[in-house]
Image (cartoon, rainbow, N blue to C red):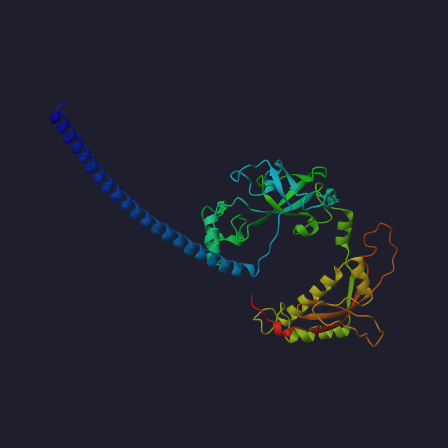
Length: 394
């Protein structure tokens, strides 16, 4: 190779090296700018994310404050309970479920109790009844937005009007209907008891209106004597059953005698208008004094006549040791015959009474043997108490 060729090759190499160096310079400069832009974008994104997190935290804090405020309002009178079981039924959807179970007497279901909370022997003797009440929660309500709005405002905005299907769009107050959309979504349903399966801890029922999966708060036996207005104990339908000890106990009333001095006490109290729920000059009640006296007297007799207690409480009343819980115990005895006195409170009245045991022969299995249902109640005195709370406004 000649010297000229070597010089040309060297020149070419220098040119290539220069071009590569120039290219590298521009490339790295460009990459540096890209990196700087990326760093700037990253800083901006970090700032945006930080602002977003702060905004979310503030919103959560506000929500917590609002919820706590709402809970503070609600918790003052809150009652907490846990379901005792659930419903299994032919109804899988709310739509199409009848308004009342007795409209579809052939419908069937089961009340399945929670064995972790309820003992199996809790069902003992339930088979002696023909029907039961199921107290439950409307768990599939569709008015969740309205409920949330009500909660956020301290339960002041819960819808007060509903449109029953039978009224064709007319609105009435929620408490004048049996709508499931209620401030406290609790319902009750009357079902016929078909059988009781203690092995699987469930009650088979028919004539129900409950959707499958409904939480059950309680079950109570149906007693038509006081669950049905105007019930005729003489003409009981063949498909209604209650235990004999329930039916016989409901028919018994104790004799109540009001002594002359007690009658005078009651009249003086009525004329002074000191009752809280009967008449009263301060309560703006249109009831006359005579009507108030008559109603209060009837209430006293009705309550004491039907006041059948446990064996323990019956013995206390007979010994004059049964005292009204909100009053001072009456330890004195009447001067005339040293009769032991018990007390009971009704309205603003403190009733002083004694119990006479009526000697009759009981059968060994007579449910009234130790209940005091055949005792005689004698009212000796009425006394007014608690007048500072009288005339409460609804």
